[in-house]
Length: 250
Image (cartoon, rainbow, N blue to C red):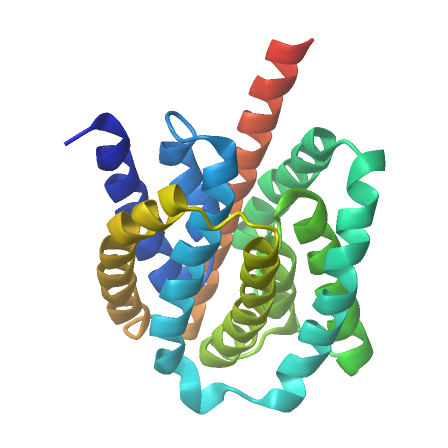
């Protein structure tokens, strides 16, 4: 088995498990393994398919908590935000954006973990949720960072863990499906990409299922802590990778 195949399988397994447990972060985790040997133009479609397949498999875990009235503002905002982010891409530096988001998560998440129980955010209603979806869409259009903002927002809303996950996963499925359609029309789903799909999908699905099994055993408080810890490590990876890239390009 080639080195690339091994890294694809490892990235799919670890990313799938984390995604199944937390409902997000497949891309950032898998990227740690895949970026070493896989061409960048192949990684984007792989991340979308790996994440989307896990989301579709594990959404049944919280299907009883899916409430369209709570989800649609995020999706509406995201649909507006993604093309805005894509249009801003030529004028912004994604490196500094990743560095900024990474630094904020690196500092903020430990403070949330160490603080006493905070009251949930009650203001803003659907307009605030739509604005969060739009921000996530813009970040996704610029740098592929759709997950952290809505995940952190749902934590701050203090919704029960199944409601948090149902909202975020529904939003991610909608955004990733849109991205996949764009890839298809742009001709990015080549034969080489499809062969890699066949390699990563079984591992991603199995490991996502295992992560989802652990998820159902977590209390609301434990799930909140898991999300904050994963967001912290997500921020650390973003910050470290951005600093590494900046150091080697200056």
